[in-house]
Image (cartoon, rainbow, N blue to C red; front, side, top):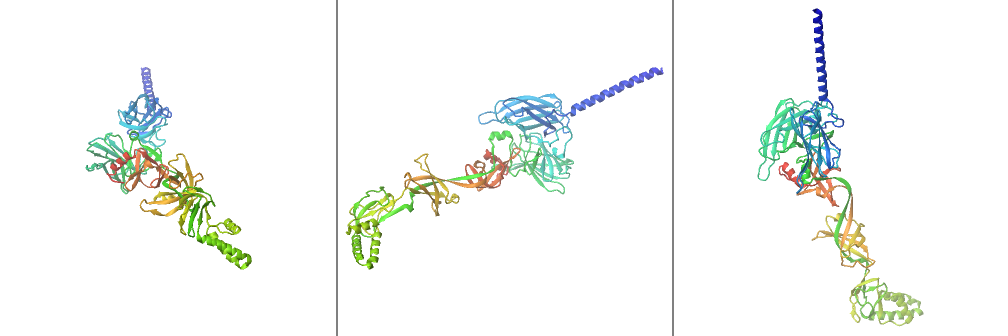
Amino acid sequence: MIRILFFTLFAIALVGAGVFIGLQVQSTDTTSATTAAAPPGLQPQYRSGPVRIGVEVLPATPRVGENRLRVVLQTPTGARVRGATIRAVAEMPAMGTMSAMQARAEMAEVEAGVYEGTFGLSMEGSWPLTLAIGAADRGETRITLDMATGRPGLELSSGGTPLQPGSGSGGPMASADETLPYRSGPYRLDVQVQPQPPRVGENTLTIHLRNDGGEPVTGASIRAVAEMPAMGTMPAMQAPAEMVETEPGVYQGTFDPSMEGSWPLSLAIQGPGMPERRVSFDLATGRKGLQVASGASRDGGGTTLEEAPHGTVTLDPARRQLIGVKTAEAKVSDLTRTIRAVGQVTYDETRLADVTLKFDAWIGELHVEYVGAPVSKGQKLFTVYGPELLAAQQEYLEIKARAARSEAAGTLLAAARKRLALWNMTAAEINALERRALPLDYVPFHAPIGGTVITKNVVEGTAHKAGMTLMRIADLSRVWIEADVYESELPLVQQGMPVTVILPYLPGRTFEGTVDYLYPYLEGESRTGRIRAVLDNPGGMLKPDMYAEVKLEADLGPRLTVPEEAVIIAGETRVVFEDLGGGRLAPRIVQTGQRAGGRIEILSGLEAGDQVVTSGNFLIASESRLKAGIKQW
């Protein structure tokens, strides 16, 4: 009897041990399956609402046609999220008359916490990817990623915050900053609004607040106001939230937007013994998520985004593509300013010569009979008869005869010869006079320079007084171009600069010269300054009084520049919008300088490497003015 009882108890013990071991094995398997790591290469990258999310597209560079989407979901402690529903849609926004296009992915759970599906893209372009995730015991969340064909990888757009490196392995959070994505001075904070998207009526605002050491900030004073700016005659409207600390470092309150639209959310935070900080978020009814606008920065994978100034506008990729936002880089480049001016061909005044009389005379034979006749230096122009010239010749011959008999007459002879030379008789003509020993009634006059006769006031037989100009000759082998330059451009012109001259009636032909002189005065009515360029004119194509287009290239050296279309003129203020990343576009007041080649110099307000908006900035400016309360910048 005792032996039977012993074997019975032994059998019961064995069964109990087996059951215990089986339960332990099952528990171990379940825990292992729940906390196992995500598939190799796919780790949680973002936090969105109650879950951590890892997303990848295969191939890594999305393409037109079929692409595979993989998503891993984990709880904040690293456990896999089973049985979730994921609605995944890649959508190309409408553009002009082209309607929006969608590419949906039917997501299925292929293993615990890992979901896969495929989607087909019908054309090249930007296809923002939106994931709507619902878990039975954790609620819903939505995250949007920027995706485009031909561009590798995905970029977070809205609805989530990047996890710090090493925090997505499924273990506990690496630091407090992972759940508090924003920083403002000594504060670390996270702000959430429920429901999502915000609605007209009651909404719940939750703020998690910590200090630099990750400790909850208790007893803080938080003033929270959502305000729709004034528009036209409609005054501004406010929806304040009375914030109450519900647990250490966690504050909650409700606010009630009264109508659909944009309600920027402003927070004034001050902890005990800590400075006050003001933070603004972009919030709108019907649009999911919050975006920091000013007063705070957001950690993104180890890179801290710049704090956004007042008036910052936040756009998701769909809205950016819809309004055609384009950006360009502010960069230091060699700036060359092209100056254009209207010029006129004139005579080179250093190459003009007048033919005048030094005595009263009558014209004899005329050898150059019309204006425009070409002449060479020394060519005979006409002959003249003058009683004084005839008497001077006779006097010279008499003194010459006496000089042969007396050395004392040598001085008088030299003076008489000098007198004939001053009256335009050449040495050869005087020598001929000596040999002939008889004065000429009509003495020839010769051209003092070679060129073209441009003035002629003489015909055969006319009488003229001493000092009258009979002809003017111009050497047209070199001419001047006189051009009027605007007062604002005049400081850029320097003597010796190269000049290019174009004649409208000679297409394709250019003439090169240099700036010879800058006139020291302005034309009062036109507010222009005159410059003079010297051009060679061997073929005589440049004729005086011709109009010409003058072009000068002023080398301004290296300057910080942006495209001209990036600058918005607002009265005396110049504004550009800088792309801060994360969809944020911030207005920057800048000082501008010279313009050249489609770019404008930036004297202050930007640095090299800054990204500025070049297209769509007028629409962005309108929204920025609204955020600033309809104020001029």
